[in-house]
Amino acid sequence: MAFATGDRKTLKPLLSKEVFDSFAAEIADREQRGESVETRFVSIDKADLIDAAVKNGAAQVTVKFVSKMIRNIRDKSGAVVDGSADQVTEIVDIWTFARELRSRDPNWRLVATEEAQ
Image (cartoon, helix red, strand yellow):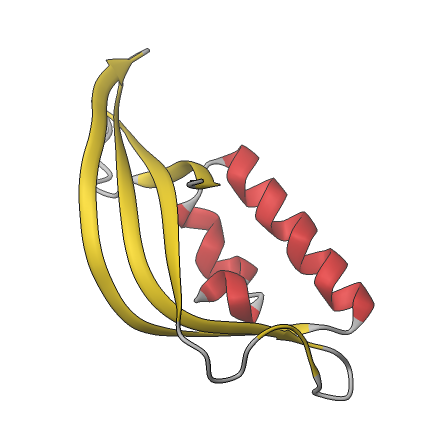
């Protein structure tokens, strides 16, 4: 939700530098175009662990999420230019989270994300 609202402050501690930079660039592009994103979660139907490994001292888990959402992009005037204001869509995403094994910080960071085909 922080990505949709452009809340960089909330995103920063949750994402790797590379993912944060990518998200921040997309938010800036959206702001420059005067667009806003509306996202409403309907349900998370499935979360499957598809990989787990330790790489360079960090634990990594990759999870495939299947969810239902209503999402759209609106222009400066508020008109929907992409997506739908009321249609529920199934979304399949693959997210990879990592956590340094020696870190005292219990939080996992999102280090990669992709839409599943």
